Amino acid sequence: MSDIDHAFASPLVRGLYLEAFGRPVVLVSAEADPVPGQALSVDLGAETEESSAASALKDALAAWRAKRGGAAMPGCIVLLSGGKASAYWPGLGYDDALRRAKARDASPLAVPAAARADAGSASRRSAVVEGRIALVTGGAQGFGEEIVRGLAASGALVFVADLNLAGAEKLSATLNSEAGKTVAIPVAVNVADEASVAAMFALTAEKAGGIDLVVSNAGVLKASSVLSQETSSFKFVTDVNYVGFFLMTKHAGLLLRRQSRTAPRWATDIIQINSKSGLEGSNKNGSYAGSKFGGIGLVQSFALELVEWKIKVNAICPGNFLNGPLWSDPVKGLFVQYLQSGKVPGAKTVDDVRKSYEGKVPMRRGCEGPDVMRAIYYLVEQEYETGQALPVTGGQVMLS
Image: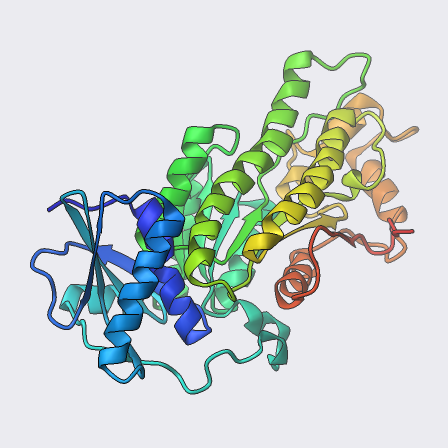
């Protein structure tokens, strides 16, 4: 028997465990032949409608638990559909789930007595992502790498998604080696290509069962005057920053909706890394600012639509990451671009441009990775906030 469609089935199955445990779980898939003893087997027939499939799964689980006094969850769930089958093993981390799958350990799992502990009671804010499955686009470098490292250090399992797969693989290998366990999984993606985005989320479903936090960070910038910028450059920036976020939310939302059908109390997050340029115009940088302004409009609109599935959608608007490669690269960096485009009047050197930008910030420095991480923790922890654009600018941009 071959595997069924994990992008469809895995989030539905994972939701059953999220609802029962009230905490993150990882779900790995494996061959279902032979069916492991003690597993819960559910035959969905030819069912492809997610709400009906969710109902069938919940009914089968309720019957399974009733026979056992309702005090445990299956150590393995096997789905059969249209002659195809797959087995799903849960774990409290990727390696734990993988170990149980390899051992074909389907022994029932006790439901923790402390299930449904309030995430807001965490003694440290970073604990709100502990155990969660996260995905970060543009995760191999810059702000993305900072976010990946922060989430992994805080106990999340992180999919490092990037057009630069070699960079994602290198970062993942480094983090896994440092942690002594699997904390990062590389995946290739072009956020401006719908097939690529869909394949990425299918892979997360296959590898981990679902997702809890999507950080849409990938972005590009082509600084130029509106009087001279090539239309192709304008479209490139728009396709990655604006259309790319639409595609990310579309396919993340489909997966998260399936998960929510079996875990209606489990909140999830989509966070766009926007920019202070999404809050105010940017001289000779209109394509970038326009894509970011538009991104906030998408955030607010998607938040209104997806709240039904307990999916929060917010944006973080960082100030300039002056120490990152986007700004400091000696060949393609923004300091060089802005010097060449004459964006900073009177600037004769790259250092002049940097000092000009530092001088615009009341706190007299650029934004750093930890500043963005604190904002991410806040948005995940905050259960009563969606559709927001959170400035992290050192006071340079203040909302009114």
